[in-house]
Length: 417
Image (cartoon, rainbow, N blue to C red; front, side, top):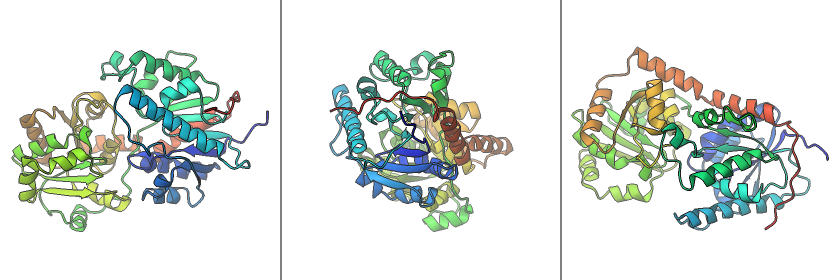
Protein backbone atom coordinates (compact mmCIF):
# COMPACT_ATOMS: atom_id res chain seq x y z
CA UNK A 1 0.00 0.00 0.00
CA UNK A 2 1.35 3.42 -0.91
CA UNK A 3 1.35 5.75 2.06
CA UNK A 4 -0.15 9.12 1.28
CA UNK A 5 1.17 12.26 2.94
CA UNK A 6 -1.19 13.29 5.78
CA UNK A 7 -0.32 16.91 5.04
CA UNK A 8 -2.50 16.55 1.93
CA UNK A 9 -5.62 17.26 3.90
CA UNK A 10 -9.30 17.05 2.93
CA UNK A 11 -11.63 19.00 5.21
CA UNK A 12 -15.28 17.93 5.06
CA UNK A 13 -17.64 20.73 6.11
CA UNK A 14 -20.90 21.29 4.19
CA UNK A 15 -22.22 23.92 6.63
CA UNK A 16 -21.06 27.51 7.05
CA UNK A 17 -23.40 29.02 9.63
CA UNK A 18 -23.36 28.78 13.40
CA UNK A 19 -19.82 28.05 14.52
CA UNK A 20 -18.98 25.77 11.57
CA UNK A 21 -16.84 28.07 9.41
CA UNK A 22 -16.23 30.66 12.10
CA UNK A 23 -14.62 29.90 14.50
CA UNK A 24 -14.23 26.08 14.33
CA UNK A 25 -12.68 25.87 10.87
CA UNK A 26 -11.15 29.31 10.38
CA UNK A 27 -9.30 29.17 13.72
CA UNK A 28 -7.61 25.92 12.69
CA UNK A 29 -6.75 26.80 9.10
CA UNK A 30 -4.07 29.38 9.73
CA UNK A 31 -2.08 27.01 11.93
CA UNK A 32 -2.52 24.12 9.50
CA UNK A 33 -1.21 26.13 6.56
CA UNK A 34 1.65 27.56 8.63
CA UNK A 35 2.69 24.03 9.57
CA UNK A 36 2.88 22.67 6.05
CA UNK A 37 -0.58 21.18 5.58
CA UNK A 38 -2.11 21.54 2.13
CA UNK A 39 -5.85 21.83 2.80
CA UNK A 40 -8.76 21.29 0.46
CA UNK A 41 -12.32 22.03 1.58
CA UNK A 42 -15.16 19.78 0.44
CA UNK A 43 -18.32 21.81 0.94
CA UNK A 44 -21.62 22.83 -0.64
CA UNK A 45 -22.33 25.64 -3.07
CA UNK A 46 -24.53 27.27 -0.44
CA UNK A 47 -21.75 27.20 2.17
CA UNK A 48 -19.16 28.47 -0.30
CA UNK A 49 -21.40 31.48 -1.00
CA UNK A 50 -21.79 32.27 2.73
CA UNK A 51 -20.15 35.50 3.98
CA UNK A 52 -18.08 33.45 6.46
CA UNK A 53 -16.16 31.94 3.53
CA UNK A 54 -14.10 35.13 3.44
CA UNK A 55 -12.83 34.38 6.95
CA UNK A 56 -11.61 30.97 5.77
CA UNK A 57 -9.77 32.47 2.82
CA UNK A 58 -8.14 35.04 5.08
CA UNK A 59 -7.13 32.43 7.65
CA UNK A 60 -5.60 30.19 4.99
CA UNK A 61 -3.78 33.12 3.36
CA UNK A 62 -5.29 32.25 0.00
CA UNK A 63 -4.05 28.65 0.11
CA UNK A 64 -7.41 26.95 0.67
CA UNK A 65 -8.87 25.23 -2.40
CA UNK A 66 -12.37 23.83 -2.48
CA UNK A 67 -14.47 21.20 -4.21
CA UNK A 68 -18.21 20.83 -4.15
CA UNK A 69 -20.36 18.09 -2.65
CA UNK A 70 -24.17 17.66 -2.67
CA UNK A 71 -26.10 19.66 -0.08
CA UNK A 72 -27.34 17.25 2.63
CA UNK A 73 -29.74 19.91 3.92
CA UNK A 74 -31.57 20.53 0.66
CA UNK A 75 -34.62 18.80 2.17
CA UNK A 76 -36.27 19.73 5.49
CA UNK A 77 -35.52 17.53 8.51
CA UNK A 78 -38.29 15.96 10.58
CA UNK A 79 -37.75 15.90 14.34
CA UNK A 80 -38.70 12.25 14.83
CA UNK A 81 -36.08 9.57 15.42
CA UNK A 82 -36.68 8.21 11.92
CA UNK A 83 -36.47 11.69 10.47
CA UNK A 84 -33.15 12.39 12.17
CA UNK A 85 -31.78 9.04 11.04
CA UNK A 86 -32.85 9.83 7.47
CA UNK A 87 -31.05 13.16 7.72
CA UNK A 88 -27.88 11.42 8.89
CA UNK A 89 -28.12 9.06 5.93
CA UNK A 90 -28.50 12.01 3.54
CA UNK A 91 -25.42 13.60 5.10
CA UNK A 92 -23.40 10.37 4.80
CA UNK A 93 -24.46 9.89 1.18
CA UNK A 94 -23.60 13.51 0.33
CA UNK A 95 -20.10 13.07 1.75
CA UNK A 96 -19.66 9.73 -0.06
CA UNK A 97 -20.87 11.25 -3.34
CA UNK A 98 -18.56 14.23 -2.99
CA UNK A 99 -15.59 12.00 -2.22
CA UNK A 100 -16.22 9.67 -5.16
CA UNK A 101 -16.48 12.66 -7.52
CA UNK A 102 -13.04 13.98 -6.62
CA UNK A 103 -10.62 14.20 -9.54
CA UNK A 104 -8.35 11.13 -9.66
CA UNK A 105 -5.24 13.24 -9.16
CA UNK A 106 -6.53 14.51 -5.80
CA UNK A 107 -5.04 11.99 -3.36
CA UNK A 108 -5.45 12.83 0.32
CA UNK A 109 -3.55 11.32 3.21
CA UNK A 110 -5.95 12.53 5.90
CA UNK A 111 -9.47 13.91 6.24
CA UNK A 112 -10.98 16.14 8.89
CA UNK A 113 -14.67 15.36 9.46
CA UNK A 114 -15.89 18.58 11.06
CA UNK A 115 -19.52 17.42 11.27
CA UNK A 116 -19.16 14.01 12.91
CA UNK A 117 -22.38 14.51 14.90
CA UNK A 118 -24.34 14.93 11.67
CA UNK A 119 -23.68 11.33 10.61
CA UNK A 120 -22.48 9.63 13.81
CA UNK A 121 -24.94 6.72 13.75
CA UNK A 122 -24.76 6.03 10.03
CA UNK A 123 -20.98 6.26 10.22
CA UNK A 124 -21.06 3.47 12.80
CA UNK A 125 -23.50 1.34 10.81
CA UNK A 126 -22.11 1.82 7.28
CA UNK A 127 -18.48 2.72 7.83
CA UNK A 128 -16.64 5.75 6.54
CA UNK A 129 -17.87 7.49 3.36
CA UNK A 130 -14.29 8.56 2.61
CA UNK A 131 -13.05 5.58 0.67
CA UNK A 132 -10.55 4.37 3.26
CA UNK A 133 -8.87 7.74 3.76
CA UNK A 134 -7.92 8.03 7.46
CA UNK A 135 -10.02 10.65 9.22
CA UNK A 136 -10.01 12.75 12.37
CA UNK A 137 -13.48 13.68 13.59
CA UNK A 138 -14.73 16.67 15.56
CA UNK A 139 -17.62 16.07 17.95
CA UNK A 140 -19.62 18.90 19.45
CA UNK A 141 -22.76 17.11 20.67
CA UNK A 142 -21.76 13.65 21.92
CA UNK A 143 -23.58 13.26 25.24
CA UNK A 144 -24.29 9.63 26.05
CA UNK A 145 -22.00 9.96 29.09
CA UNK A 146 -23.88 12.89 30.64
CA UNK A 147 -26.45 11.05 32.79
CA UNK A 148 -23.74 9.15 34.67
CA UNK A 149 -22.01 12.45 35.47
CA UNK A 150 -25.18 14.31 36.44
CA UNK A 151 -24.81 16.84 33.62
CA UNK A 152 -28.14 16.24 31.89
CA UNK A 153 -30.06 13.92 29.63
CA UNK A 154 -27.96 11.93 27.20
CA UNK A 155 -30.33 12.14 24.25
CA UNK A 156 -32.37 9.48 22.52
CA UNK A 157 -31.46 5.77 22.57
CA UNK A 158 -28.63 6.19 25.06
CA UNK A 159 -27.22 2.68 24.73
CA UNK A 160 -27.31 2.79 20.95
CA UNK A 161 -25.58 6.17 20.93
CA UNK A 162 -22.79 4.81 23.10
CA UNK A 163 -22.40 1.74 20.89
CA UNK A 164 -22.20 3.90 17.73
CA UNK A 165 -19.64 6.24 19.27
CA UNK A 166 -17.38 3.43 20.44
CA UNK A 167 -17.72 1.54 17.15
CA UNK A 168 -16.55 4.58 15.19
CA UNK A 169 -13.62 5.10 17.56
CA UNK A 170 -12.54 1.47 17.15
CA UNK A 171 -12.56 1.68 13.35
CA UNK A 172 -9.09 1.43 11.88
CA UNK A 173 -9.60 4.39 9.54
CA UNK A 174 -10.66 6.62 12.45
CA UNK A 175 -7.34 8.14 13.51
CA UNK A 176 -8.96 9.92 16.45
CA UNK A 177 -11.70 12.19 17.67
CA UNK A 178 -11.63 15.65 19.20
CA UNK A 179 -14.40 16.87 21.50
CA UNK A 180 -15.09 20.28 23.03
CA UNK A 181 -16.47 18.45 26.10
CA UNK A 182 -13.73 17.63 28.62
CA UNK A 183 -16.14 15.37 30.50
CA UNK A 184 -16.26 13.02 27.48
CA UNK A 185 -12.49 12.64 27.60
CA UNK A 186 -12.64 12.06 31.36
CA UNK A 187 -15.36 9.42 30.95
CA UNK A 188 -13.02 7.27 28.81
CA UNK A 189 -9.80 8.00 30.67
CA UNK A 190 -9.63 4.45 32.03
CA UNK A 191 -10.25 2.77 28.67
CA UNK A 192 -6.83 1.76 27.34
CA UNK A 193 -8.19 1.06 23.87
CA UNK A 194 -10.30 4.17 23.28
CA UNK A 195 -8.67 6.86 25.43
CA UNK A 196 -5.65 7.26 23.08
CA UNK A 197 -8.08 8.14 20.28
CA UNK A 198 -9.78 10.92 22.24
CA UNK A 199 -8.55 14.45 22.91
CA UNK A 200 -10.10 17.58 24.33
CA UNK A 201 -10.39 20.60 22.05
CA UNK A 202 -11.03 23.94 23.75
CA UNK A 203 -14.31 25.43 22.53
CA UNK A 204 -12.83 28.52 20.88
CA UNK A 205 -14.05 32.05 21.04
CA UNK A 206 -11.88 35.09 20.61
CA UNK A 207 -13.05 38.56 19.69
CA UNK A 208 -10.63 39.89 17.11
CA UNK A 209 -10.42 43.51 18.28
CA UNK A 210 -11.28 45.59 21.34
CA UNK A 211 -12.49 49.05 20.33
CA UNK A 212 -13.35 51.58 23.07
CA UNK A 213 -16.84 51.12 24.42
CA UNK A 214 -18.01 54.63 23.52
CA UNK A 215 -16.71 54.25 19.97
CA UNK A 216 -18.36 50.83 19.59
CA UNK A 217 -21.73 52.08 20.83
CA UNK A 218 -21.62 55.08 18.54
CA UNK A 219 -20.81 52.89 15.53
CA UNK A 220 -23.74 50.59 16.31
CA UNK A 221 -26.15 53.43 17.12
CA UNK A 222 -26.53 52.38 20.77
CA UNK A 223 -27.12 54.50 23.87
CA UNK A 224 -23.84 55.86 25.22
CA UNK A 225 -24.52 55.25 28.93
CA UNK A 226 -27.27 52.68 29.58
CA UNK A 227 -26.44 49.23 31.01
CA UNK A 228 -26.58 46.72 28.20
CA UNK A 229 -26.90 42.94 27.80
CA UNK A 230 -26.16 40.94 24.65
CA UNK A 231 -27.62 37.70 23.29
CA UNK A 232 -25.44 36.58 20.40
CA UNK A 233 -25.33 33.93 17.67
CA UNK A 234 -28.13 31.90 16.17
CA UNK A 235 -31.13 33.25 18.08
CA UNK A 236 -33.34 30.20 18.36
CA UNK A 237 -35.54 28.68 21.05
CA UNK A 238 -32.56 27.32 22.97
CA UNK A 239 -31.34 30.84 23.79
CA UNK A 240 -34.47 31.67 25.86
CA UNK A 241 -34.73 35.19 24.52
CA UNK A 242 -38.24 35.31 25.99
CA UNK A 243 -36.82 34.87 29.50
CA UNK A 244 -34.22 37.57 28.92
CA UNK A 245 -36.83 40.07 27.74
CA UNK A 246 -39.12 39.34 30.69
CA UNK A 247 -36.27 39.76 33.19
CA UNK A 248 -35.08 42.96 31.52
CA UNK A 249 -38.55 44.45 32.02
CA UNK A 250 -38.45 43.62 35.73
CA UNK A 251 -34.87 44.72 36.38
CA UNK A 252 -34.56 48.00 38.30
CA UNK A 253 -31.52 49.06 36.27
CA UNK A 254 -33.62 49.07 33.07
CA UNK A 255 -31.01 47.46 30.85
CA UNK A 256 -31.01 47.70 27.11
CA UNK A 257 -31.11 44.36 25.28
CA UNK A 258 -29.11 43.72 22.11
CA UNK A 259 -30.01 40.66 20.00
CA UNK A 260 -27.41 39.99 17.33
CA UNK A 261 -27.25 37.12 14.85
CA UNK A 262 -29.55 35.07 12.66
CA UNK A 263 -33.08 34.98 14.02
CA UNK A 264 -35.08 31.77 14.02
CA UNK A 265 -38.86 31.70 13.69
CA UNK A 266 -39.29 31.59 17.46
CA UNK A 267 -37.68 35.02 17.79
CA UNK A 268 -39.81 36.40 15.00
CA UNK A 269 -42.82 35.20 16.95
CA UNK A 270 -41.61 37.13 20.01
CA UNK A 271 -42.03 40.39 18.13
CA UNK A 272 -45.75 40.16 18.84
CA UNK A 273 -45.24 39.73 22.59
CA UNK A 274 -45.94 42.37 25.19
CA UNK A 275 -42.36 42.26 26.48
CA UNK A 276 -40.95 42.93 23.01
CA UNK A 277 -43.39 45.76 22.35
CA UNK A 278 -42.71 47.40 25.71
CA UNK A 279 -38.93 47.23 25.47
CA UNK A 280 -38.96 48.38 21.85
CA UNK A 281 -41.31 51.25 22.74
CA UNK A 282 -38.91 52.34 25.46
CA UNK A 283 -35.98 52.26 23.03
CA UNK A 284 -34.40 49.44 25.01
CA UNK A 285 -34.40 46.67 22.38
CA UNK A 286 -31.95 46.49 19.47
CA UNK A 287 -32.02 43.73 16.84
CA UNK A 288 -29.28 42.89 14.32
CA UNK A 289 -30.85 40.03 12.36
CA UNK A 290 -27.98 39.12 10.02
CA UNK A 291 -24.60 37.52 9.72
CA UNK A 292 -22.27 39.48 11.99
CA UNK A 293 -18.78 39.96 10.58
CA UNK A 294 -15.67 40.15 12.75
CA UNK A 295 -15.68 43.96 12.86
CA UNK A 296 -19.25 44.22 14.14
CA UNK A 297 -18.65 41.27 16.46
CA UNK A 298 -15.83 43.22 18.09
CA UNK A 299 -18.05 46.30 18.38
CA UNK A 300 -20.89 44.31 19.96
CA UNK A 301 -18.79 42.74 22.70
CA UNK A 302 -17.08 46.07 23.37
CA UNK A 303 -20.41 47.88 23.59
CA UNK A 304 -22.22 45.67 26.10
CA UNK A 305 -21.70 45.06 29.82
CA UNK A 306 -23.11 41.55 30.15
CA UNK A 307 -23.57 38.52 27.88
CA UNK A 308 -26.61 36.24 28.14
CA UNK A 309 -26.20 32.45 27.80
CA UNK A 310 -29.37 31.50 29.65
CA UNK A 311 -30.18 28.49 27.48
CA UNK A 312 -33.33 26.47 28.04
CA UNK A 313 -33.44 23.32 30.15
CA UNK A 314 -33.48 21.12 27.03
CA UNK A 315 -29.95 22.23 26.12
CA UNK A 316 -27.11 21.03 28.34
CA UNK A 317 -24.24 21.56 25.90
CA UNK A 318 -21.47 24.12 25.69
CA UNK A 319 -21.39 27.57 24.05
CA UNK A 320 -18.47 29.26 22.30
CA UNK A 321 -20.06 32.59 23.22
CA UNK A 322 -18.68 32.09 26.75
CA UNK A 323 -15.11 32.26 25.47
CA UNK A 324 -15.93 35.21 23.21
CA UNK A 325 -17.37 37.14 26.13
CA UNK A 326 -14.39 36.28 28.33
CA UNK A 327 -11.94 37.43 25.66
CA UNK A 328 -13.71 40.81 25.64
CA UNK A 329 -13.74 40.96 29.46
CA UNK A 330 -17.52 40.69 29.68
CA UNK A 331 -19.25 38.82 32.50
CA UNK A 332 -21.87 36.17 31.77
CA UNK A 333 -25.31 35.24 32.99
CA UNK A 334 -26.26 31.65 32.16
CA UNK A 335 -28.63 28.91 33.16
CA UNK A 336 -27.70 26.85 36.20
CA UNK A 337 -26.83 23.28 35.23
CA UNK A 338 -25.48 21.71 32.08
CA UNK A 339 -22.03 22.43 30.73
CA UNK A 340 -22.69 26.17 30.47
CA UNK A 341 -23.65 26.49 34.12
CA UNK A 342 -20.75 24.28 35.18
CA UNK A 343 -18.31 26.37 33.19
CA UNK A 344 -19.50 29.72 34.55
CA UNK A 345 -19.48 28.49 38.14
CA UNK A 346 -16.23 26.54 37.96
CA UNK A 347 -14.28 29.42 36.40
CA UNK A 348 -16.24 32.18 38.17
CA UNK A 349 -17.17 34.05 35.01
CA UNK A 350 -20.40 35.62 36.22
CA UNK A 351 -23.60 34.12 37.61
CA UNK A 352 -26.19 31.45 36.90
CA UNK A 353 -29.95 31.56 37.17
CA UNK A 354 -33.17 29.73 36.42
CA UNK A 355 -34.47 31.54 33.30
CA UNK A 356 -38.04 30.60 34.27
CA UNK A 357 -37.66 32.49 37.55
CA UNK A 358 -38.08 36.00 36.22
CA UNK A 359 -37.62 37.92 39.50
CA UNK A 360 -34.44 35.98 40.32
CA UNK A 361 -33.07 36.56 36.81
CA UNK A 362 -33.92 40.26 37.04
CA UNK A 363 -32.11 40.43 40.39
CA UNK A 364 -29.01 38.88 38.80
CA UNK A 365 -29.14 41.45 36.01
CA UNK A 366 -29.29 44.24 38.60
CA UNK A 367 -26.40 42.77 40.58
CA UNK A 368 -24.11 42.11 37.63
CA UNK A 369 -24.83 45.44 35.93
CA UNK A 370 -24.45 47.52 39.10
CA UNK A 371 -20.72 48.02 38.57
CA UNK A 372 -17.89 46.91 36.28
CA UNK A 373 -16.24 43.54 37.05
CA UNK A 374 -13.73 43.72 39.89
CA UNK A 375 -10.05 42.71 39.64
CA UNK A 376 -10.72 39.08 40.60
CA UNK A 377 -13.42 38.71 37.97
CA UNK A 378 -11.22 40.32 35.32
CA UNK A 379 -8.47 37.84 36.16
CA UNK A 380 -10.92 34.93 35.88
CA UNK A 381 -12.09 36.13 32.48
CA UNK A 382 -8.52 36.59 31.22
CA UNK A 383 -7.42 33.12 32.34
CA UNK A 384 -10.44 31.45 30.79
CA UNK A 385 -10.08 33.40 27.55
CA UNK A 386 -6.42 32.38 27.23
CA UNK A 387 -7.36 28.70 27.56
CA UNK A 388 -9.99 29.03 24.78
CA UNK A 389 -8.15 31.40 22.47
CA UNK A 390 -7.53 30.95 18.76
CA UNK A 391 -3.97 29.88 19.59
CA UNK A 392 -5.02 27.35 22.24
CA UNK A 393 -7.55 25.85 19.85
CA UNK A 394 -5.13 25.71 16.92
CA UNK A 395 -2.39 24.23 19.11
CA UNK A 396 -4.77 21.47 20.22
CA UNK A 397 -5.54 20.61 16.60
CA UNK A 398 -1.84 20.49 15.72
CA UNK A 399 -0.99 18.33 18.74
CA UNK A 400 -3.75 15.88 17.84
CA UNK A 401 -2.72 15.63 14.20
CA UNK A 402 0.93 15.21 15.16
CA UNK A 403 -0.09 12.33 17.43
CA UNK A 404 -2.53 10.65 15.07
CA UNK A 405 -1.73 11.50 11.47
CA UNK A 406 1.10 9.00 11.07
CA UNK A 407 -0.63 6.09 12.80
CA UNK A 408 -0.96 2.99 10.56
CA UNK A 409 -4.43 2.72 9.07
CA UNK A 410 -6.25 -0.11 7.38
CA UNK A 411 -7.61 0.84 3.97
CA UNK A 412 -11.38 0.42 3.83
CA UNK A 413 -13.36 -0.25 0.66
CA UNK A 414 -14.97 2.59 -1.20
CA UNK A 415 -18.50 3.05 0.21
CA UNK A 416 -21.35 1.54 -1.77
CA UNK A 417 -24.82 2.97 -2.05
